[in-house]
Length: 355
Image (cartoon, rainbow, N blue to C red; front, side, top):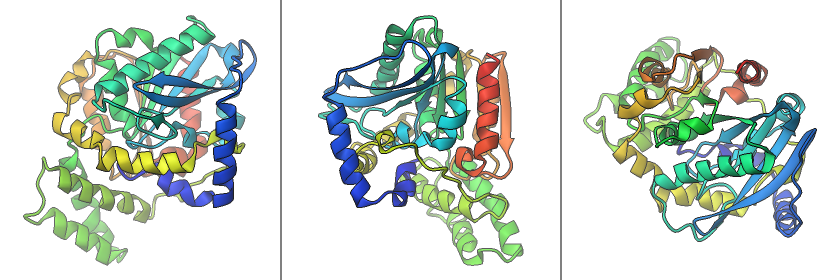
C-alpha cells in the first residue's frame, strides 16, 4: 500500500514488451466487444466513468455463476497484476475472476475530474451493475481487496444498500483503518529487538527502533505514516520466516496495462491527488464496521508490517456478520498471494465455493 505493488514487479518487464503492449491495448480498444455467455471467458472491455476510460477483464468459468472482483492495492496500482499463470490455470477454472483498475489507477486514462473517496465506491457499484447486466443477475459477486483495496471495499459496504449487491468480502492484508501508525509501531517494537538479538539486519532494525522511540514519531500524522510505510515494506522482506515472493509468470501481454499510464497513475494518485492522505484524514470506515453483515474471510500475512494482523482482529471484533473466517499465512508478509501462492488461493477457492 502507498508503495506500489506494480512498481515492485516492474523489473519483470522490458521496454520492448511495454511498446508492444501499449500498441496492442490501443488496438483492442477499437475492436468490437464480445461477451462470453457460457464456458470459459476471456473478455476485455472498458467502463467510462468521471471522464476516464477504465479497463476491465473477466476471465474464467462463467458457468460457475460466481465472480470474484479483485480490488487492487495502491492507491494507483492495477488489478491486472494479480492475474498470473497460477491464477489462470487454477483459480479461473473454478469461477470467473474480474480484474478492474480503479479510478486514477492502473490503465485508467483521461481527465479524472473529482478524486473524492466517493468515486471509488460509486465506480465499484457501477462495475457490479455492469457485470450483472452483461453476465446475468443470477451471478454471485464476491469482492477481494488487498492493501488499499481493503479500504475501498468496506467503504463501499457501509454505503447505503450496497451490501445487497454482493455475496462475500475477502480482506487480504487490508487498510480499513487508515490511521494504523500505532499498529505498525507496536509490531516494529515487538520484532525489532528479537531480530537485533539474533544478529540479523542490526543496522536496519536499530534505525527503525530509534525512529519509533523518537520525538519525530506521532500517532496521527500522515508524514510519519509515509516513513513507517517505507520501513514496513522493507521489514517484511527481512524476516527470515517469510518466503521469497513467487511470480509464476503471466499468460500474455494483454493482461497488462500500458506501463506509462500505470507509472503516472501510481505516482500521481498519491503525490498530486493525495487520495490516501484524504482517506487518512477522514478515516471513515473505523466507526462504521458494525454496519457490515456480509460473509467475510480475513486473510493475513503473519509478518505484514504494512497492515499488521491487528487490523484483522479489529474487523473480526467489530463487524456484525455471523459468518467470519480467518486465516494467517505464517510465511508471508504483506502479499501472501506472492509469498504462499498455492496455499493462499486454496483458501480463497474453498471459501468462495462454499458460499
